[in-house]
Image (tube, rainbow, N blue to C red; front, top):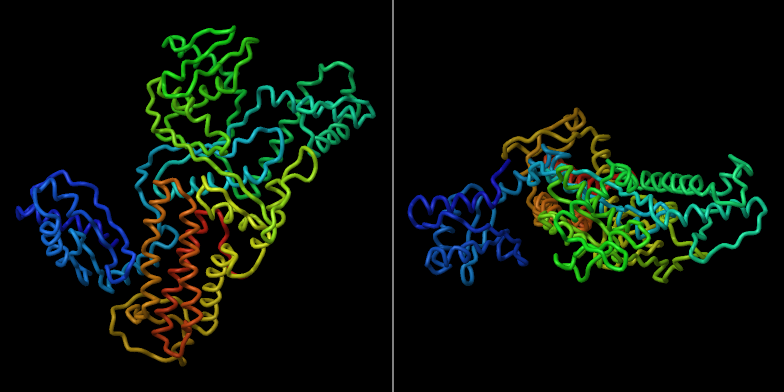
Length: 570
């Protein structure tokens, strides 16, 4: 592993501390940026300005001291001090070529890190009520949650993916009654179907399944059979949800039932704990929690006047149970309509003395479905909507996941179905996957001519042309033959991948990976179109193949994080 720029700066500071030029022992965080202009260097840092007040010296004076030491480091080409005290660092060619070697040797592990230090993190996402199929909004949340979990794992966190099943409460009872009434309809009964019941065609499909399996066994004028219909409906819909998610490339570690919280007595235990702390009171026959004392905009009901527990009551029990399982960070991925729910959950955590900063909430904005730029109606018939399954069946899992991740989660997303199906550069997922497939084709072509990706040797090896030796198999490569500006631009982009993954994990922004892959593909395709890879110069060919293999590796690693395939042919 070659020294990072951060390591080089830390070493320079240490040298200045040892010779007495810098006296500060507690150093600020070292911030390294990529300048917008190439002539400002490969990297820049403002560390001298951060040290100025501690040292009682002008920033430029400190910057000159550090620059002198940085120039002594290996692979440094030039160091400039600019403006009030910025240090601009230009790396030598060997630095970038060594990074290329690192990619080649790490392969699938390139981009991974240990910044998570094994901390236990739970990512709870989708958690749609089992009252109907997943719609495209759920799909976006699923793509964000699963990709974020992959990124966190790559950054060294211990991650658990969980789906919280809301299988108790009024909405589930209405689901059971909806199924019961549709069942009676299929048996020829005349029923009155209430407006607040579930009217989707999927309810009729489940009712037909019951008729097929049980005939008129449950044809009764009373409602004694409602528990059966409620359980049958919820289980049937959960099977559909699990199938859709599996086909979407998502496997959860846990499926956590809300009902189990009641079965284990955890809801009452949580309410009792709040009572002991004297932050619960009775009003109008209901039991209230003083969440307003802990930052919420008003107090919340835990138990209604009729004795029914609210959703909030089970939700706080669930979050308490999450913490008791030892997670150091809880990540909830919620729809944008849950914004008002955040305050009460944070209030509960504070009330029990937990650090609410351990709770991270990512809100998923709406998806506007388009076809050639024209909005697609979100519902075909009453009680229906565009499902994740419909979109997956039309454009495929890969395009679906990629498009869901092309914008920041809290920004509204316009999803054009026709664009997602195009095999053209304007389709971002095609453009990225095609870069991978194109490189696979290049390597296959080279192998057919007898050339294979070789081992590295020191610079200075003689250049050869193709002939019998080319066809005999592996030859050594001299990557110092990579000299074009476009080649170094690509290498520098590849070198930034680990920082992109780290930044994406820490900021919890998976869209950074899709942005990066699009930028990398946009650099590779023009390079390939302009420069032949397999040439009559065997050594140059080897060097360019080596670069192509590094690009292929990084694209594949990035696509793996997104849960998207890296095809070898397209």
